[in-house]
Amino acid sequence: MDPFDAEDAEDAADTADPVRGAGHQVPAAGEDWEERPEGPSKSQFKREHQALQALAERMTKMPRAQLERLKLSPVTWLALDETSRIKDVRALGRHYKRIANLLQREDMHAVHALMDEAEARERAAAAGHHRLERWRERLIAEGDAALSDFLDEHPDTDRQQLRTLVRAAKRDTERGKPEAPRKLFRFLRDAVDVGSAEEEVAADEPLSERR
Image (cartoon, rainbow, N blue to C red; front, side, top):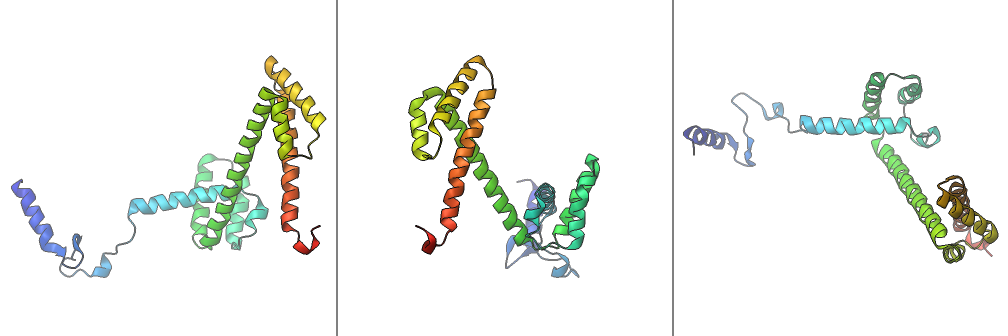
């Protein structure tokens, strides 16, 4: 070991806190422990504040009806409402920082809970979209076989209309046209959404009122 490194190691050992070990140094003469707080590092604080800014930006893009579930202060509401009037990119960046600072005074548990719910809805919507895309691909590729499977899952679907749309989508796909496949996707989405809505109503209905 280099003699200078050895001296540095000895100095560190001499000033180490005897209770917490070599990673924690005792204060210098005349220095109080309270003058050496062990809070988060600057890099950690920066990461946390950047995450808060990203959260603030997301909140400015959420429907007001969802945000109204939070008991935000008037000054925070005012800052959120001002966002739509700011067009300059750099000014927006400063504005998100301002909202982030205001959010630190709000009930962050409620804010994070709301954002978690929103993210869960977004994931569910994305999963539903991909599921419909897979159904459309199957129906175009497999025809009646896939159509029967879809009707088994969604028996209230108009069979004849679905078969007509599938044939048109298959024809347009072969020609490289997007119109009929788009119509088929919208039809599938409506069929699945109606079924899901009926299931939710049944689930919310009191047992005494179910037939």
